[in-house]
Image 1: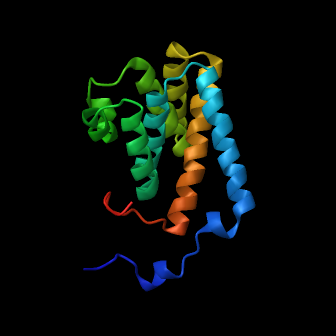
Image 2: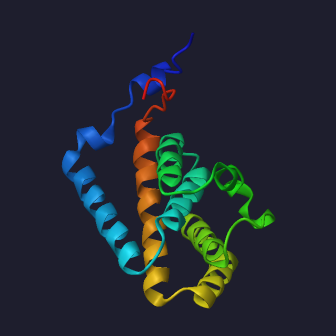
Length: 162
């Protein structure tokens, strides 16, 4: 059975381990963003939806694995997580969640000015300025973690091995 490790991935370094001070700073940012979201009144499931949607767009398997488990622990359902990639085509997400997802997508693909305007308009309809800022920071932070894991090729192991 193949382990999935190729010669090119075997040479990758885990940049979080190689540069622990920089990674620690990112972890501190993440903790501050989590506190900001809580103080702004954002539910943990909403923040995890943002983490998951950004990780889907960036195709970060490691972060998808981590945040799927976190979303389930926070009380989200397998149905909602299963349809997250097609959230616009469902009725299972609240107006606040839909606004947060649109904003997270706009942060992840900032070159789409039309999407940014739509996202801000939708966010302004349901969120305070503090909540909008917290969602944007959550998306920025998970984008950074995605890049750490993608460039390091952090492995995703079967649950029995994790």
